Image (tube, rainbow, N blue to C red):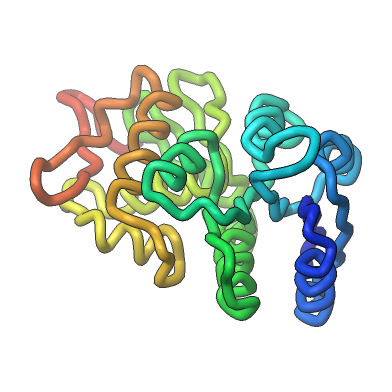
Length: 235
């Protein structure tokens, strides 16, 4: 069970989503305005926010930016709900830090699958930290059990999806990963996203990794590879 906040001004849709998410075992709250949604997210700390883009007072994009800028809410899952389905709209959504982007109209079953995929990415692995100790690789330190990463001793604030992307690439280091395989393995379902989405997330991940950005290499025409710089390696 997870705590989920729905920020959606279409009341009928909000009620349908609330009912189905409750049936799936989740704790759900709803509101219809962006500023109220932002306040509730900060107060209630849900695991995931279903966020409409076109809200009557504050656009969903601004709500998302505020949540990602706040250390208290930075790690929570965010799924955009919108009628805007063009590729550029999706890319902008992911660049703002959304974990998924669902275009209206959508099937409730598909949305539930996407919700579960985002929640899975945010859960620590079974067994906890004792079963999976942190790993160090050159300038990078990754604690998979705690979903935390550091570069040169400074913690890097990653979303659940960015952390999953980093650990997937690290676990397969020195092996090229195609964009298609990353879409399947990182997103966790056959998501309706494009290979450009992968590029957007890799760009964001590199920006956050800073001095360790070069570990994630582009293999032109194929995809990406996690590779060590000279003298770097696991410790």
